[in-house]
Image (tube, rainbow, N blue to C red; front, side, top):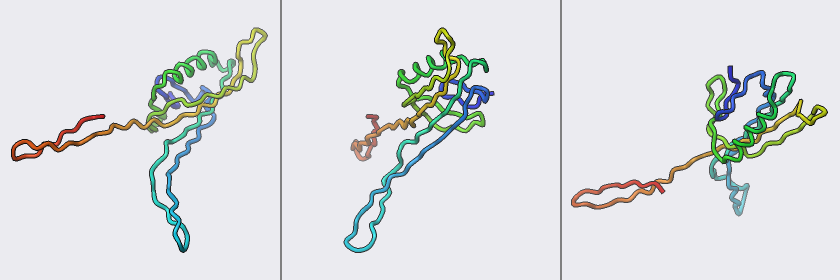
Amino acid sequence: MDYLRLGDLKLTANDGVKGFEEQTQYNYAKISLTYGKPVLQAIGENLANITLQISLRSFLQHDINAMLEQLDKMQTAGEAYLLVFASGMFKGQYVIEQRRTSILRTDAAGTIKEADIELQLLEYADREVVASKNVEKGNSVIIRKTSI
């Protein structure tokens, strides 16, 4: 059973997922007043950041090179991927913003035997801007919506 899915990348509980952190933020403008404390005005949300920590070990049958190749392809594709947990909890669409790899052990030929990977995911918020135009035709008003 999958622990989580990021696009076509599926990780089970045995695939070494050892950490998950999420950071969300809401922005406020601080408005100074002549007297008294400043007041806050809500501005809006920031994009969510998620950090995944994955430990890969060849003795646990992890194909470390294949995992690194897949992550590189996903990152350089510049596409957003759905992030879903096994429980069915949909987190949204995310891009791989950064991958940090620590190679802990190799064999004599240089094949990676143990590695820790940290993925920085950034929420992808696709926004469709709609411009509305009121057009008068005869005695009625027609509203035309066009995407920009």
